[in-house]
Amino acid sequence: MLYLQKQIDDAYEYARQWLGQGAPASYIPELSKANPNHLSVCITDLTGHTLASGDSDVRFTIQSIAKVIILITAIAQRGYDAVFSKVGMEPTGDPFNSIIRLETMRNRRPLNPMINAGAISVTACIPGGSPEERFGYILENARLLTGDGALDYDRKVYQSESRTGDTNRAMAYMMRSSGVIEGNVEEHLDTYFKACSILASCRQISRIAAVLANNGVCPDTGRQLVDPLSVKVVRSLMCTCGMYDESGRYAIHVGVPSKSGVGGGILGVVPGRMGIGVFCPALDEKGNSLCGIKAMEYLSEKLELSIF
Ligand code: GLN
Image (cartoon, rainbow, N blue to C red; front, side, top):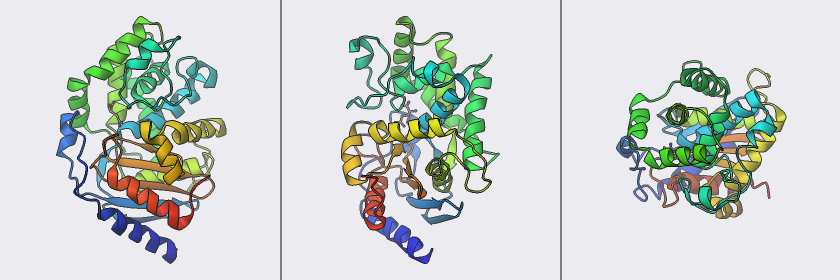
């Protein structure tokens, strides 16, 4: 344990060298207010014990990390076949918010659930009579996975994205026009924006990751929170698509199935070993946490975490 704490502290010190580089996301205006000097590295082992370094209790919006929870929720409610009739499983090589393939791919389905178009399509699969009900299922899963029954979303970030998220809006309308999604587009977007605005700490991100590392079983309670098929699906997609158009380089340099978000968080799953959370709001040009990736590279090398 002492050895692991030292490695986490060292990863934090190592990543600190890049503080000052990159910048918080600004296309969602509220996110530009984030403190770019916040930095944290956390590991939760498979007994449920969390070790932390840095600003581990600062809450930030999980943004695209929500795509993992959205997918888990949709598969649990609608089943694997129904969900993957609305979204593919292939990497894109394009930025996370790219719209171009929606027009050029033959069947118009978004390529995978880890890009914006795919996550919006998966969100639209979640059944429910109202957007509140659909978001309620996602939030409930986020609460179960973190073990925090009070987890909530950030109203200001949600409103900020809802006001400015016209690219996502364009994608959603385009998907409805081609029959990929059905129903009220604004309601689906509302659900997606709220899911992206869920607030969690780095410590909590590592706890979600630990459940996925532990084949869906909560390390604290022994309860199966995510079915094994969904665990396999999300871990695979994180590996091939979780870091967007940086996924290939990241697989070589880190080799840990991971999902990033423009709030600055990265969730990393080391199957059978541990869950990792890293956090720093300053992003690289691909929209991934710059210091976060440095911390993951350090941990991967020192703890020999690459699954490859
Ligand atoms: N809410 C953000 C969006 O849809 C999430 C993007 C991200 O974290 N990469 O643009």
